[in-house]
Length: 413
Image (cartoon, rainbow, N blue to C red; front, top):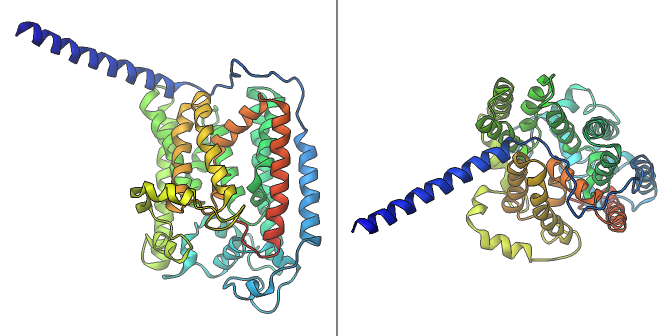
């Protein structure tokens, strides 16, 4: 009897030791700084695969060629759209810059939130900028909206490049910016959407959160939840850091508090405008897949939707969206090696759009996940150059395809 008791006691103590060791290792991993260490089997390249500045020039020419020479606007779809720009008359040249969500944001900036409106599904920071910059009321509203979006993208890319260059090396910084440019849905950084604003704020948070002058990160993390639905998940970074770090905790408390205040401001804006702080969630019923967190309770439906293919890029059965989901799941593993805290930030940003919206527009919704872009750029930088060039070509071809659809008022994402 005593022998049996001692065996049980030994088993319990062994389990406690294992859990204690695992917890300690986990905490140490979370507390680790960003690691840009090349894999053991990495190919070390001393030159750039392609200059990002040259790619920007190529992409700009492609953008202008498709804008001026691409397919004409589908007049029937334009006239049937409730937030079209201009609201009266046939489409004009600038209407090509105000398709679907870009037009929705201009409309929302002019009219504001109203109870029972589908526009309550949009987050307030981007329309606020359009409204108070005067862009929404301008006779060239789509052009100004696009210009502001490109400005945010340019500022964010420049800051990101400088940060990576200063912490690692210029070639890796070039590869990451090149990866960002080559993502198939990255065309939306250059259109009147929230993606570029979200990207800019995320870059400010990541690059300034641990610098001696960290106050810009507090402002940025407070604005991120006002920009897109997945913005609130950035809270994982300061929250997990608070659990494992013993120094600079005041910075983390400020970041955490700012993020919470930002989200509360979003709910308050809806409450003041519509009388219901959850009006944004209710407005999801107006959209194709009626995004809902309850979809997480039905994982078999997710699997079924994943394999329900309709074409290369269609609203409900896009191969491109499913391919993007597949490679982002794979990228979570190298991301853990770069920065484990970023893993827990990126994971819900991948899972929520996939589950709640059944992959609709997934390739666009996820271009704003900066940690995964860093992970992809880091991996491509050390892989075979031929594969990197193939990825760039793949991205450029898809951007031509998506731009042609977007500018003609066909669904692009």
